[in-house]
Image 1 (spheres, one colour):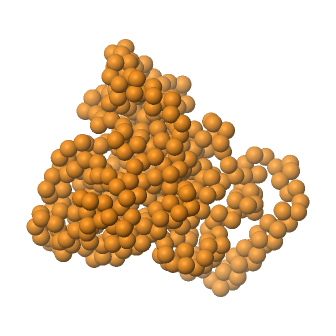
Image 2 (cartoon, rainbow, N blue to C red):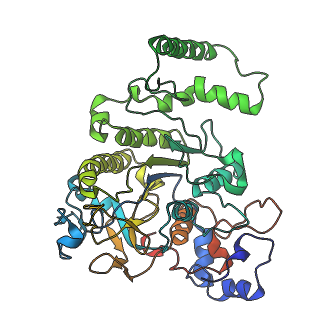
Image 3 (cartoon, rainbow, N blue to C red):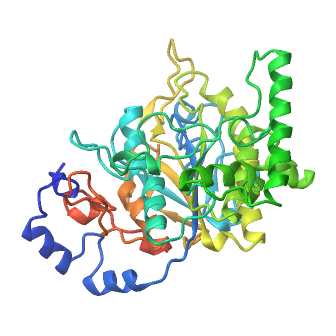
Length: 443
C-alpha cells in the first residue's frame, strides 16, 4: 500500500501528485473529462444508505454461485433470473428480481480487511485508517457540505435509523455538530416517536403511563406552538430541538400518517418500517439517512439466519425502490446496500461453526440505485466461487467519490482540518491510494 499521509495531514501533496492530477486525473479520467464532470449539476439530493452491520454474505444474496458446489452454496443452491437478462440474484429475492432494472450490482468491491471495526470505518468513511486522525463518515461530510451550501433544513441532515453504528465516531474530525442523529426505538412499534418515547422492555405500568402522558403533553404543546410564536428568544440549537419535537418536522417520523397497505408492503418489521421512514425523511429534505440493520455476522447458523433475514430485505428494498420511483424520487435519491465486508464463500461446516461463514474482505457486493446511477447493470465480477475479484476492482473510495459527485460535491474539495492542514473530501485527491476510478459507466 502506498503512503496515504498527503490525504489528511499537514504534509502538502507532492508536486508529482499535483502533476498527476493535471495529466491523468486521480479518478481514472482525462483532465477534460474531470472538468466536464466537475461542471455537471448535481443529480442527487439525498442518500439512503442500507447498512448491513456485521457483513452480509455475497454469494447467498447478490452474487450467487450455483455451480460452485454444495461446499460453497450450502442449501441455497440455485439462483433467480431477473427482468434484466444475465443478472441473477439469490433464491430468496423474488420481489427484487422484478425490480432489477432499478438497481446496479457492484460485484467486485474489495479492500482486503477482515476486521469489523477497521472494515466498517473504511466502508463508512471511504478512507483508509490513519493513526493521527479519525475521518468523518460520508454522511457527516454530506451534512457539512449541505450546511456550507446553505441548504440546512429543520431536520438533522444526517439521521441513522434507529441506533448509531457504534464501531467508530461518525463525525470524525468535523466534530459533534455533524454527528448522526439516531432517534432510537423501533418504527414498527405503534407508539414510535422521536427521542425514544417508546417504553423500553421492563418498564413499570406507572412509568408507561407517565410516558403516555408526556406524549399527550408534547402533542398539546405542538398544537399550541402552531398558534403562538413559541420559538422567539431561543438560541439556534433550542429552536432546532423544539422544531424537531414540536414542529412540522416531527410529522416526518409519524408512520401513522401512511396507509396500512403501504406499511404492509414494506413489511411490518423494524427494517421494513425503517425503509418507509427513510422515504418520508427524503420527502422532508434530509440529505443522508442510514438504516442500521445488524445481525449479519453469521459465523454460525448462516443459512437459518438467511432464511429469516433475506425475505424481510427482499420485501422492504423492493417496496422502497418502487415507491421512490412511483413518487418521482428515485432519480434524485441514491440508495446503497452493503456492509463492512462479505463472508467466506466456502461454508464452515466443521465444529463449532456447523454451517457458518466468516469475514471476507477480498471481494463482496454492493447494490446502488437512483440519484444518477443507472439500473439493470452489473459492474465487475468475482471468480467462479466468489473468492476473488475477477475484473474491474471497485474500492470503497471509488464508490464514495461517485456518490459525492452525483450529490454535486467535489471529491477533490477540501474539508476543515482541526490543525488547519490539508484534508480532502475523498482520499483519491492525494493520488496515494489504489483506485479503479469513478463509476462513470453507471453514472
